Length: 618
Ligand code: ATP
Ligand code: MG
Image (tube, rainbow, N blue to C red; front, side):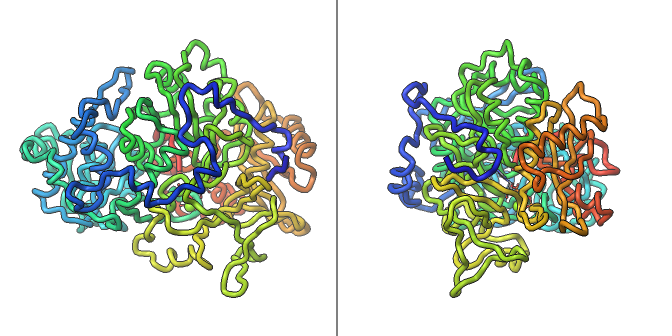
């Protein structure tokens, strides 16, 4: 077998016995599915607005189900702190989002204008998202744990017209900066309880006054067209200042198709996406894809906690689970025995996104769930899953899988400065197997971003020779599986080798004492750069010099002296984004005493009180 990373030779391919699956996967024959696929044909699964008036995500996600036999079906099931649940049916969602739309209309919030949210995962968030789509306004979700400055920065960049939030969040994060936001006309408090703060409105009161008769009629949905802007999503800020990616209503075609192939959604599924809608995963796959498929989606209102999560998987009888490496590593750290006693037998598919998924975590899934974890890759910019491991396809642990039907992926050769190599007016593609290049995608899929808000030039720089350049480096093996190497900015150049931090981090995690690792390059007079690892230990291990040497020795044996870390430092907390991604640029800046750059998405920024960690995603 060819492999893309050194470590993978030690992880055998995981084969599947498809005949024994409880349901037949939607994608059985990968080659045939790719051959037969077209986006136009994928759009056939959508309804379009009645009378051919256009396309609206909310109609596809909610109202078309509410108009038929699924009206009473549970659409969203919220799990409260005490484990009790409350549900909204497709019919409820249609009415309540219709009322929210009526409120926006009564305030005069217009098409294309931005409606922001700063909310926990409460029902009001979900009805606000769908109601905003219905009016043709543009939704921009903010993660509720952001501090005042990141909130201000995004509201300002996105010229937010309305904001839906709570009293406490408003007081703490918006009121102090409100006077710097002249565009922000309306602040709607979900819990004003008849006494809104000065300068805010009581949403419940406005909703009660909204015309309920007309609220659930599809005729009330604006006649949005496929190319109309629907969503503004800020990127995670892992490599620098977050960018505002623009998405359009047509994206729903990709949410549908990828939900079908990469998450294998079937109508009877109980599906749980752990990402917060403040990040693109929580929107595309926590709201849109499951609702468009008419399944029941679980929403946990609390934060990541191993026992709670196992309990939810078991008690809610979750069948399809979409989570993130940071959450899986946390469960691994907590120990597999924590899963014992929970009946996880309903689960049939587990997927992960957001960061590279270490082979160790893929295989760990088999021990705990009886199912391997299926890694998939995408970005805020791509709006939907682009490369995935599918239920019916063997997994090569450490590989992010193969491109979705309808997606053409390639590797672009890079020069010594990291720029794409241009030949004859086009870019030079890497065609040999197992050779690194910049991961590139052929534009044209529906959930592709249509721009970075107010950053035309930055957007244009993402394209060359007819390809969208993702900024990530990868390899492809002879059988077409893609292997993530690292972000372009994170790759380490040491004595003529290009080293991807993922490979080194995955190897370190195989050491029994290591829970998590972040790897960077630090300047070296001889080698150019040498590899330095920051390591978080599993509970019960002491940070001694002996252990340090033991881990370095362990990595050397597996990776060779050229790739293994030369330097290793123990740390109690790797810096991460609020969506759980290791911030290697910050490790590096701190190591070199350089400016720390944009820290708006840092998990516990200095000067802010620590907030609960989000278990989410990209
Ligand atoms: P910013 O663009 O602001 O630096 P970000 O790239 O982390 O932040 P997202 O769009 O949330 O913002 O994340 C997408 C990135 O996450 C991808 O480009 C890739 O680097 C990483 N990623 C996502 N999924 C995977 C995966 N399965 N394997 C490896 N990397 C992944
Ligand atoms: Mg990015």
